[in-house]
Image 1 (cartoon, rainbow, N blue to C red):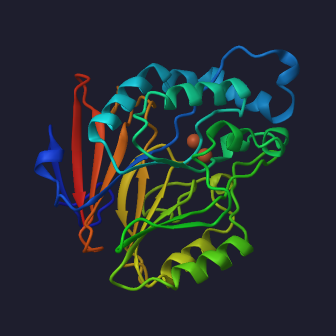
Image 2: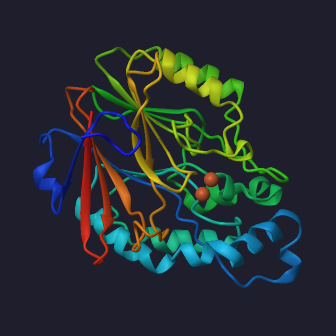
Length: 316
Ligand SMILES: [Fe+2]
Ligand SMILES: [Fe+2]
């Protein structure tokens, strides 16, 4: 079957994909949760100076009609049912980096079984103001799930590694991100230690590619996207680049020459309601065979129009 952007993948839909699509008991299973964007609609006027005012206006007019935090407990329950080996949070847990929004995030994460380890990176909305970034509100709230240093490189098993990159920074007007030369250089050296028989999950808040047929705003993209692409292209191992930031779920084997070993994966915004996903976009599960980096399964878990959990699978 052809996916919604024309790349060849095998897609199947199942009410119980853990039975139908599980490639093997030895697989490493990761759940990926995208932009939650918890928010508070009532905040004191003196806290709405500068950029936060822009964020709140945007919230009042648009976001609170689309993002429904009441959908979040069901997402957490489903993650517990899936029971992944690791939960990855790709950032934008908040909307304007208010301490109350971070407190709500901490409360929501209490719904996740304690036995599921969590790795979290910040999105641009988690460092929305210079003060919130300077005070490290994201790092404090999500401790100990946030790596101490970036790039964070971790062996998951003999075949799979995790590389986490931090690209979130406060900006006066735009939503652009920047990984920076130093982080890219260190990450490049780390990835060169891998072989073609291995795979790496690269975690970054921003997409690494502009998909064919999509429209992107320049002021919403990663400033050093070309450098990130070069990093992924040079990697000897299979690459799964997982991110959020764009509020859609996708599984995109990159069609460009030099990237045949790279898949760009967006988990979607879990509580964002659209016509296609009236109960939110859910989350994704990656099934990574312990001995084969080239047989990856992507499961998109979401609630159908009746509110029932369903799963769409893509393989590559
Ligand atoms: Fe976002
Ligand atoms: Fe974002």
